[in-house]
Each structure stands twice: as structure tokens, then as C-alpha cells.
Image (cartoon, rainbow, N blue to C red; front, side, top):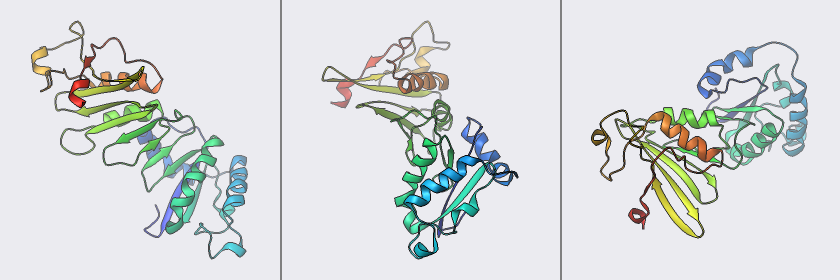
Length: 247
């Protein structure tokens, strides 16, 4: 969608599948769906044009490449086309306006879906991809599923709760998962280690060069989910203190 001279986003009313992969597959059908425009789109256009005019008097310096944008309103989706040179200044405000109205934004340029039900304040970094603000638990889980051993993305970082963060990387037969904690003015860097009772294979085959066991895909999702929900490092893991390695 779009070209080098245009920055295009689709703004949609729900329900939208919680899986980003599924949502992208259904987007074209959502855009083509016929029917009366959702009333929320008219309010959206009113708010957007109050800040970014789309009338003839502002045609030369408007951010919009198709005017007026009210003509872009659809039944379940509204596709907005912007001049690429100005879009970077406007997109964050447009996205926040849409999310505050309960709408879902599909950004073709970043290949991201910005959802109103995401966890506020969190930042999800996946190697070689733009940072995703306010991710959902489903988006975090899908990011873990994308990790590979040879080509990006090979790591994922979840942060936004103070200076604490959690991160994971793919290591062939498993994953390394870590958690940085700031407690009482002290910093601790912990690595997840599978407790002996939980291990289903020979532990020696799962040791990294640092002595930290590899964990599974589902383990990483549980660890990152705990961080996302504001919980402590899950006590089902034996957390190895690796602070000295980072000092």
C-alpha cells in the first residue's frame, strides 16, 4: 500500500483479531467491506482536521495527499494518505487520537499494528524492527515466536517499568532470558534458569557458556508476560545472579 512519496495508514473499528499476523491477513477485506461508515470515523476526522487542516486554503502545506480526508472514510476502515515529508511529525498524534477513540491503526511503513488495548508505557524492541509502543500481551508473545538463531530478529527487549527490563535471545536449542532489577538503589541482573524438577532433558546439554540453562519458548513468554503485568520474576525459575558480569 502506498509508495515512496506517500505515508499511508489504515484506521479500523473492531473487532480486530488479537494476533497481528491474522489481522494483517484480514485487513484488505476490512478495507473493502461495504456499508455505512462507522460514526466514530466522522468524529475522528473532525479531531484530525482541527489539528491538521484539509481544506483548500491549506492545500499547499497540508500533510494530507488526498483531500478532503472525509472522503476516505469507509465502513470498517479509513485509509489516510499523507505526504511522506510531513508524515513523521503527524503520525504519532494521529495514532494517539485514534487509539484514544478505541480504534486500531495499521501502519504499512513500520509493519506495526497500534492497538488501544495495549499496556501503556511499555516498549517492545525486536531486533531490526521499529520500537513498538504499548504492546499487547499477544504482540509480545508473537515477538518471541519470531526469534531465530541465524537471521534477525534474534533478540527481543521489553522495557518501560522504571529502569527495569527483561530480554531474551534465541540460542539454537533454546533461549536465554534475563531480567534487570533495580531494588533499593541496587542493580541486579538475573538470568532465568530452569529448576531441576522442571527440566525434561539432560541439563548438561542445555548449559550456556555462562553456566545459565536455556529456557523454552513458553518460558520466555511467561517471563515477559510477568514483566508486562508488573509482577516479580516468576519464582518457578531459579534466577542466577549475573550482576558481576555487567559491572
